[in-house]
Length: 185
Image (cartoon, rainbow, N blue to C red; front, side, top):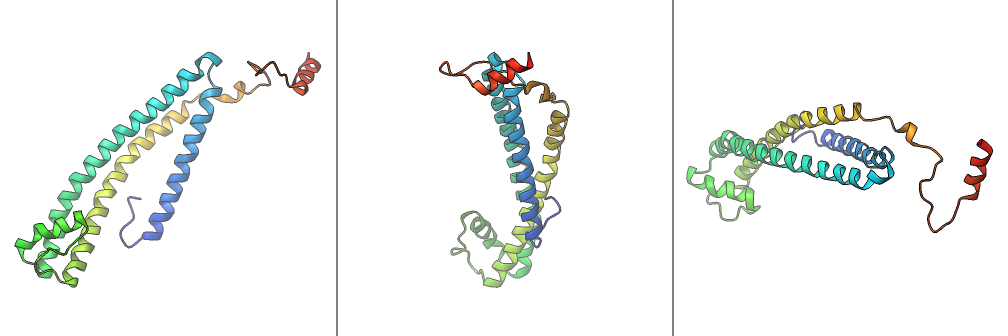
């Protein structure tokens, strides 16, 4: 995603889909395997630790991402949008109202704003926003490396998948399973 721009929408959509699909797959594997890799008495605590850890990491990541994006966006707006708007012909006194227009979505109260100035300023703002998001995506690589490391040290759950049923519900037995277990003995 860090390689996309405002002009490469198709690439951004494909990368977003692939990223979301991959994240969903990894998330489902983790949520499915945790109960199978723990003793029966520890399943509740294990799932609780998984959810708490996931929530904590998400909160930390969100704080980092939003802080970096806000700081970089304000820097890039000053470096890109303000000069572009001034070069397009807007008065320097109208710049604060123009920047407020990007926040509120309304440019009705910007004195001296023409459609051409608004188009130039909007393109510059989109570019500034894109550059700020690029940095956020580059930071997310660190979280990806930690996640891959965690996946590599995860236990192999194959030995946990057996025909043993730890607890039967309501006294009912699976007669097919019982017969198969008797034949094995």
